[in-house]
Length: 115
Length: 113
Image (cartoon, rainbow over all chains, first blue to last red; front, side, top):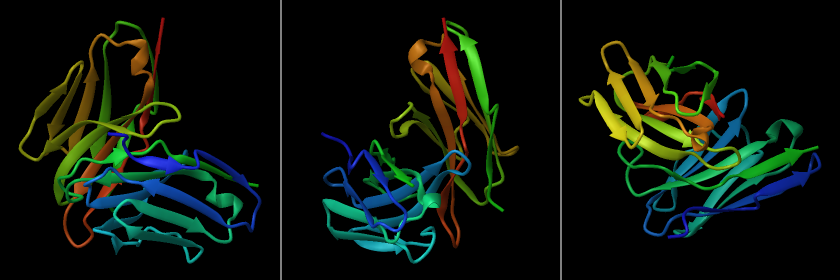
C-alpha cells in the first residue's frame, strides 16, 4: 500500500497566484481530511469528506479556499488568490472509519510558501 | 472552549534515557485520545488511540496513560533512541454538536548522544 500521496511536496508562489494541492487517499478509505499546520497554531482541520461528499468545511478560512473530491481516489485543495499568510504545510489524511473511531493516515504534506 | 495543552514545549534527552510527555485537555464530552509522532518534514503517524475506559496502552517502547477524571494523559518513552527525535502530538476527539479532533501543538523531542 502506497499510503496517502500528496503533490506537490513543495510549492513556492507569489501572492495573488492560484495554488492547487492534490491528494490521493488510501484505496478503500471512505473519509478524507485536509489539514493545515503552522508553528503557531499546530494542525487545524480545514474540511473533510465522506464518500466524496463534503461533511464539514467550517475550518476553511475564507472564500479563497475551496476543496473538491470528484471521485474516491482524488481530491484537490485550491487557494485563489493566495496570500503570504497562507504559507503553511497542508496535509491530506484518509481514514477507513468515522472521525470518532477511525485511525488517520496522513500524507507527507505539501509545504506552501507564498511570497 | 475545547483545548489540548502539551508540556513541555521541547525536550532534550540523552540516548537511552526515559522521558514523559504530558497532555492536558478541556475537551468535553470526551470520546478518545490519540498520540501521534511526527518526524521532521513528514506527516504524523499514529502511536496509540485510547478510549474513555482505557488507562494504559503500549506500543513497543511507547506507553500512553489516560486519566479521564483529571483529563490528563502522558506518553512515556523508554530507553530512548536517536530515531525517537520528533514532535509528539496529543489529539482529543470530542462528540456533540461539533464532533471533531482537537490537536495539541506538540512536544518537540530531541534525543542526543
